[in-house]
Image (cartoon, rainbow, N blue to C red; front, top):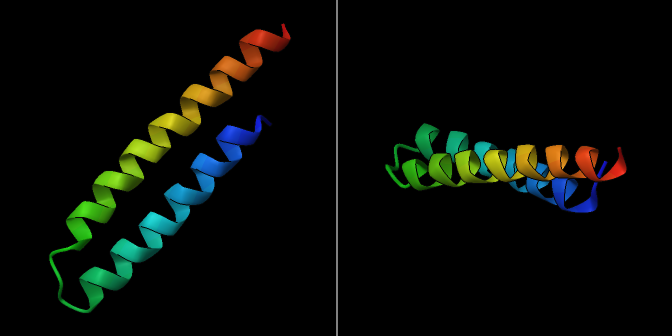
Length: 56
């Protein structure tokens, strides 16, 4: 698994956890965390696909 994909996955998981905590506390700042999770998820998929195509 490419290193950048692992980092993007870690950011995605942390952003999801931050969004959950933020929404539980009643803060609308969780919307920003959800957007960050979506962005990092897309980055993870991109780096995974790019890594697989390079190795083939």
